[in-house]
Length: 366
Image (cartoon, rainbow, N blue to C red; front, side):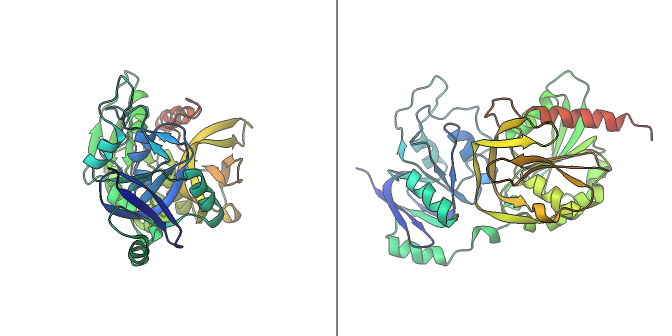
């Protein structure tokens, strides 16, 4: 016998469906993702921490859960909203179904929701907080939701970051470069790209200061993606401001926003964010258009860019900034996920550019 569940939005809109996964109550910012596959990667992406993930593709779970596609050690999204979930998946790598996977990690799901109608709601009204429950009536859930903090008030990247330094060796026989990776909620695929290009990676906590990073003698620094508003990362912003120009720097997604703020730019919250694997981005230098994977709710303000900062990539849907360079500093900063695979290899060249930049910088006369 199925149990009813409710998704209640902050404005009182209620969606009724079938409970699956964990039989519990959770809340978060309700966002939608337009990807047609990759639900396991999305669920374990730390950038979805603090959010209720709505998938626009109607059938979810049909290839099950495997042991290789996790982007972190556990599910990061607080809840999952789908039109239909598959209880009997079919794939040679599948080890369990989506229902069991969610339940095992204490994450609730709701099925039977018209997710495209919900998406239209979020696109017109903007993302908002929601409460997902199989234990409360809608009126009680709405009252509970209004007593909880908003997404923008939460310092989620600090929660997603590692507590200890972790050294990961290169998997390639190429000449090694040492990358210090500041973990704001890093995805495993970013580390795989770096080690595959011959980089030794030291993952450090988000609170690591400039002095410790310099002690590690990196050839380059990468600031990872992660969840939440970059305004909560003032200390990291100041650290990057101190280190700018000392070694090549790469920022991805939240890392890109931190770099931009360190340079003197401003950030703002998007109405409903960019979440999905089909966002067109134009390289301003070449005119080439890339299909990109994106997952962010904040962006860099193009109206107040400081001197020396140049826009390298632009979103063709809404003209927001997707990449920055600097006239004086060795810098690659992108809003989208170069480690994502919608192309499937459209944007992996950026990691090679970062490695090339480190080689060039290391060989300069001192």
